[in-house]
Image (cartoon, rainbow, N blue to C red):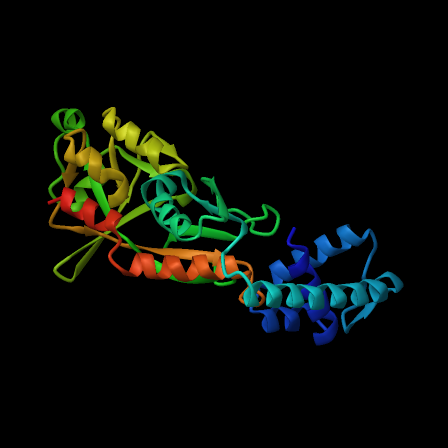
Length: 306
């Protein structure tokens, strides 16, 4: 648990009079405020607030904890001032989370460049197929590709991710090649487990088309679906950065090239905008610039599809 942030949340709840007001003041979701308060009570080993439908009030333990939290926050401000006024080298540990395919295909390239600039910093990159809980999993920054972002999350858009539809030569030889998006409904399409009913969307010359697809293999990780496609199980829609090398090598064939699959957003998600650690702020700003500058992983992959 980030105890500095938990202390800040607890102080905000007391000063603002409610968890809703604290969430607004900290630009944080109420769910996140509740989790931090729960963690603070676990840390202190006591109930800190009396909760009623009308107001919150401090327990005896809460009174003492409030004083200690304020001292802790003041100390953290003083420590940050010392760090910023002295050696400007970034130090410490940042924990990042993203999917395996995104981590291997893009994030590690950005992280490598960032670490070359800040060699005294450490980054722990956690590859997860699920949406992590930032507080419980002690993640500083989660990178996600989605068009269905929870509005309660604090997120900064980084870029977009183009996709491509493809299948193996063996599959196409047996089942035929789709010529238009609607043909996909008649094929075995490999889909993501957590997407529920899969609807693949396309656009061509301003015309949009959405097709419900299904198949006999689903997975919660892009690389599994790609391997299934290479083995001839069915058709996949995958990020360009993940499928481009397989298409270039001939293991997969790009389908419907005149139709552009729906692009997805790339977001950086973090727990709060206030009192963000210097190293995390530097990494976030770097990622914004890195993705905005036509990163080489996108450029190279686009060239492979031509």
